Length: 384
Ligand code: HEC
Ligand code: HEC
Ligand code: HEC
Ligand code: HEC
Ligand code: HEC
Image (cartoon, rainbow, N blue to C red; front, side, top):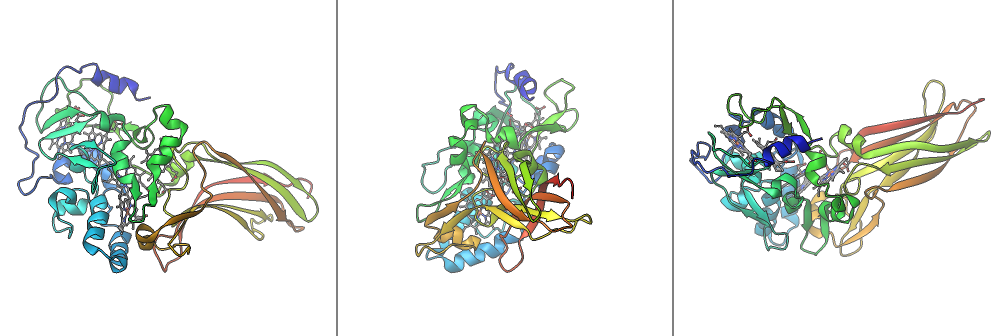
């Protein structure tokens, strides 16, 4: 789907950008604000501003979770640098862990990603080799310099999961992998087939790479890599990853034996993500003609994390800081298909069995989980 677009650029791999107009380098610090980039890349900016990356420190949850984490922590300086360093990575270079500068409040911002030179996961403190400055790294090799900034082709950006792994893989102070999306991907068949995070999360969508008149490419195809990076907060993305169908239903007068197939058909890692506050739930019940459901039964797909005493952790702050071992992990592995069996009680009014997949996010303590319905399947009961 994307190969012609990319090969068109890559076949021109002759000379990398060299001119340093450097108009986009901010006067105040090493990093340029996303608003500067938006002056030429407005279409990409719009998608990015809708991403959770753009809100990673200004979300409702981050400040309160950070406060709870600091209250629990024995080394507050370290904890603050760790949390803020991932959610607002320019601070790794600027040291602005108090988020005083505007660019720090932009979370995972353009200029951080596009100036990263390398990622070494085993490095102490931060895996990113950051190189802020006039050279923006990206998926293209340009023949001629252009107005705005220098550019360099980067395989890390074009197709490597390491760019993402720098943040989407995290071992806490107890040595427990709290975030393991990257290692789950590595174990999946997608890594063997060379299908990277970008292929699924940054598909090509209509848009202009740069302001009209500045394009370096004369093709009439106008596409950009989607910078919205949808995950569990997007029902569309969840739908892309999951399949739900009935295998069989055999009903007697008072109950139905039901087999339902749930599969992770489209995510390159387990579903849901590894934070135990997020779960996927299969809800099954019989319904009467007006749609009223009988008693519902559930299967929950989730990873459980425990502290040193073996208690299950529910609070994100505790999860990041105190998780010591993995309890039950019922999440769907990449490409896994699971058959679930239920015995559903029926009444005289029962007309169908309905199965629903929900995504539940219980990341905000003290409030009910946010529930979104991903998809539904229905089996009509005949002769009733
Ligand atoms: C290695 C990078 C990294 C570190 C360190 C880190 N986070 Fe995160 N955080 C992430 C990523 C990535 C996600 C999204 C994970 C997912 O959905 O799979 C996330 C998710 C969250 C969320 C949930 C956001 C939501 O709306 O669902 C909160 C809140 C949060 N982190 C706060 C913290 C706090 C507080 C700390 C420090 C104790 C911390 N994080 C440390 C990378 C990090
Ligand atoms: C004055 C206009 C201008 C500004 C401001 C600007 N850019 Fe660009 N940028 C361009 C042009 C022109 C291209 C080439 C577009 C094309 O492929 O047709 C480009 C290309 C890129 C590329 C592709 C590089 C590659 O080798 O694949 C990246 C990444 C990029 N810009 C990032 C940024 C970031 C990040 C900012 C803000 C810090 C920014 N740009 C600000 C004009 C600008
Ligand atoms: C999480 C890291 C990340 C952030 C944040 C990010 N980008 Fe990108 N960007 C990428 C990656 C990775 C690619 C290449 C994707 C591919 O080739 O599949 C890319 C591609 C691009 C390109 C080349 C054109 C294209 O569509 O492929 C431009 C220009 C660009 N980004 C500009 C921006 C601007 C401007 C922002 C902020 C508004 C931004 N990026 C934020 C990672 C990021
Ligand atoms: C500098 C750290 C950093 C980098 C690099 C990074 N991410 Fe993230 N990502 C985060 C954080 C932090 C969150 C959680 C934000 C929140 O919810 O507050 C997140 C959230 C996400 C989400 C969840 C969105 C949702 O709807 O729940 C997806 C998907 C994602 N990132 C994909 C990627 C991909 C793909 C890459 C590589 C191209 C990447 N990220 C690179 C830090 C990063
Ligand atoms: C084969 C396609 C595919 C690949 C490869 C892939 N993802 Fe995903 N990703 C998805 C789908 C579909 C979802 C929605 C289901 C879900 O939320 O688990 C998703 C969800 C996510 C989420 C949100 C998890 C949650 O439950 O909220 C994050 C974070 C994420 N991906 C990061 C990554 C990173 C990092 C990589 C590379 C190491 C990657 N993805 C590789 C398809 C893919």
